[in-house]
Image (cartoon, rainbow, N blue to C red; front, side, top):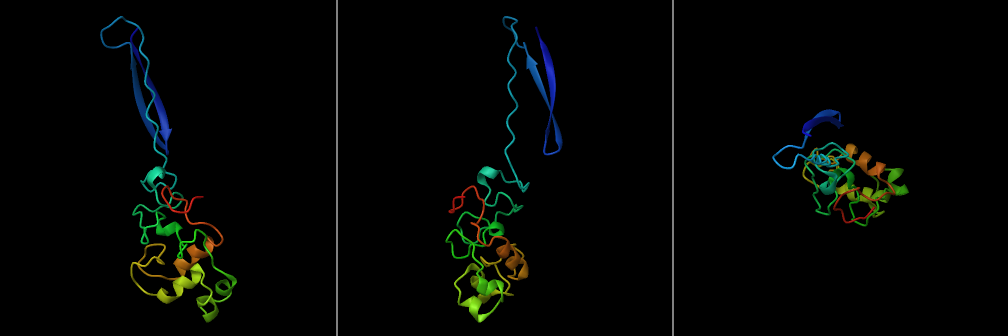
Length: 157
């Protein structure tokens, strides 16, 4: 028996139609087996980069900017001392910037020397070419957490 099945799949809100043919192409007339459609690659943050190679899986970052080359994209890597844990510290949470914060050795303290400077710094977490309070806000959001997640980062979740 020959025939066709049409199936509709909805992936990320887009309707995709597939046509499955069976029993086609000369031969014994037996029914063929329709192949399953290929699985769509996961892209959790919808940045156009598959999760399997995304350096910041949960945050939209199509440029995949990773200025320190540790495998974690800047948007999710406020771990500026690369010890796999983001630290703000009470010295910085209570007064940024301050001499006490600067002496604390925390990730927040690492921002002080380049704060309000323009350039492609590791501390420029959001990629707007200036280290400012927007970057500090990202750092505070990660306080006590590892950077990432990333498909290839140095810090395992």
